[in-house]
Length: 194
Image (tube, rainbow, N blue to C red; front, side, top):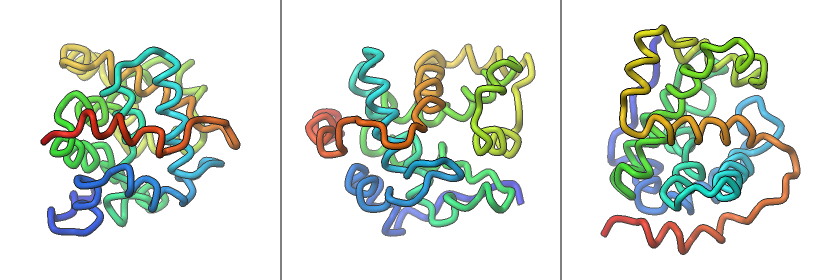
């Protein structure tokens, strides 16, 4: 099996991911984040807080908040790595976020796994990955080749995806104090497509 197909547009979680991604994150994010010692919601909130602390613009903060939305949209994406499958959560989430916010939010989400593969060309980076993240790296294709890395860096938004990846890697701290999900409601409204 090479991966999961995105769910059809009529599924309730996919529709909710488009119509109310913050609500979906709040309601469905209480489960453990893969093999990490935090929940999906805690990971998302930590990632967004790190983006804000780093001075990211609001669309990139929203990308940080919603970068793993695909895990919540697709019912099998959460357990894909346990089954030895790349759930392609970045594509599933980006597809929903594109419809809700447009490319400024969706593109970094779409590329955050590729950013991990880009960074994994350096062994020192791989040593910083959590056990779960190192496992999923293998499922996602492992480190990029030189040609893949050059193609990745030539894409618009590659630098934003690398920033997102850094926050993603750091956002795994149990009991971290960060702003709650509701604090992002106005930001979501400001950037939502009409």
